[in-house]
Image (cartoon, rainbow, N blue to C red; front, side):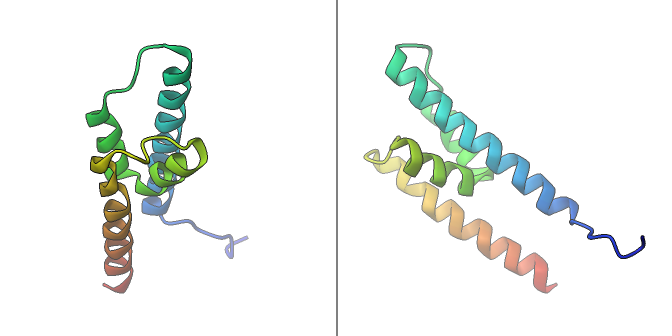
Length: 91
């Protein structure tokens, strides 16, 4: 039993944060369609900064915030997070 797959804690954290980010975008899209209370754009960008994969997938799946210029930051956040992961993996 010592050969069990061990997932690095950082990877678990990134998976959780990206899932939360995806949920935020989905909830905001749903609320925009039903007239409910919206998630502020600043909060969406904050969760996108920490969870850019989830945010980007949310933008594509829900077709949400794709025309807003400031949300062009999401792919940039994604590339930055990829570079950070690569950097941490190499050291």
